[in-house]
Length: 93
Image (cartoon, rainbow, N blue to C red; front, side, top):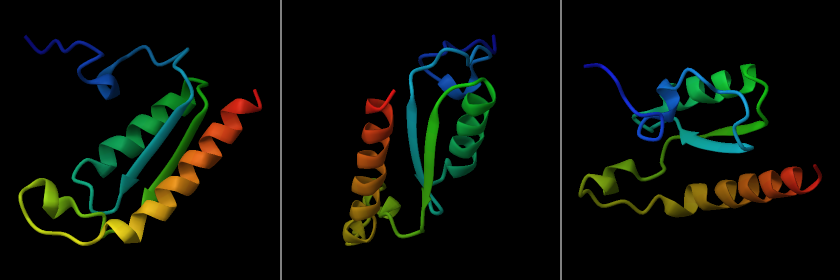
């Protein structure tokens, strides 16, 4: 009881060293924002290369629950920018 495989819940894993470079994007309206930020911090503390970015609210979370949302345009450019920077950074190492 209380055991979870690290592949199912990597943020609960106790062994964080040696993880591949990580891009972690979350948003102020993400229900798991705090968990994502905590996970990025634990990865970095373990010596892993982490790039993280918190997008402003308005990423369209209501749409995953069946609600309508036209917010994609407000965050897509930020995601593209963060991803391009992440790929460029890991390409230099």
